[in-house]
Amino acid sequence: MPQGFPLFSTVVLIVPACILAGGLQAQSQTAAPPDAACKVTSVQKTSTNYENAGTSSLGDVAVTQLDTNGVYQVYIQKHGTTGFQCITCAAHGGAPGVNLNKPMINWHPSGEWLVVGVEETSHDLSWMPASWQRGFLQSGIWLNIWVTKPDGSQWIQITDFNSAGPANGFVGVSFTPDGKTVVWAEIVNGNIFVNLFGQWKLYMGNFSISSQGVPAFTNIRDITPAGARWIEPGMFAPDGKHILVSSDIGMTNAAGQDQFALDVTTGQVQNLTNSPTVWDEHGLYSPDGNKIVFMSSYPYRSNPYSDSVLFLQTEFMLMNADGSGLEQLTHFNVPGYAESQPGLTVAAVAGFTADGTQLLGAVMGPNFTTTNWIITFAGPCGNRPK
Image (cartoon, rainbow, N blue to C red; front, side):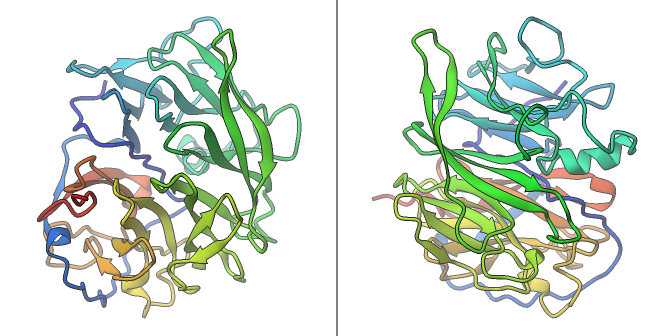
């Protein structure tokens, strides 16, 4: 059962696909530009380890954690309470099976709905060891989109990749701040011998509630930018128009994915990082929309293997919303720092607290081990007074 969890703004902790850790070391190279409020004052490991966690607009906290049978379940801590309750650990009508993994969660902006990635009832490669399968599940493979009430009383399955279409999993889901529009990506071809991460499509739809109170994704359309084979939505900016995506647009190697800002109203794409030999992923806006935090192998770009799947090593990076002012926040792969870790370490994803003074991050080490970290700034780095 999860223990207490700090009340952070919505943070989705998704671990990158199929990464193995070893013992290669490299030296950090980036220099931080001056920004007093964004100076890191501490990087501390928490006593709890969640791969996915998020706080709703109503203050409810959702986390995913393995149960005693090694299955990912969803736990909710209601606002004003101290304990977590599992909403997927017992069978009841309409809910997904207890034996199915639920490793992904995303809050709707209203706080009244929770999107859950639920494992398909059957899928290929089920013969693989459970720990190996988790690497695929954490990356969206074999998952269907479900929507539930925070107390687990109502479950609606949005996609059914078993019965129709080429897709066999998703990543996302991201909502506009008003909760009316939803964006996600589906894998449509898993041939990794042709495309390193497979081929994905980005979709946008309307989030609607029927007169009977049933949620649905409607008016679905393909908004995949030209040239994208791998694409993963991050989050919308406060303007509700621009969404961050990790993608290989215009690249020959998807491992060199960049951070892009996609205007969903015009289709215009802006490359924010422009580093095709560096792994840039999981970008998230600050609450005020002026900063972006993301994971990157940029500090280790002199090492030709640092952006490869087998030898990936990354740190949390910060930049302005237009891609300027790049700053390295952590040093997990560099000896001599408080947060230094043994072996190759992947700073996977981090998100701002509502007041912009801290980040909550998920970090992956050898054998898919995950730890959570709190990065504290000198001031309100991500939520400046207007």
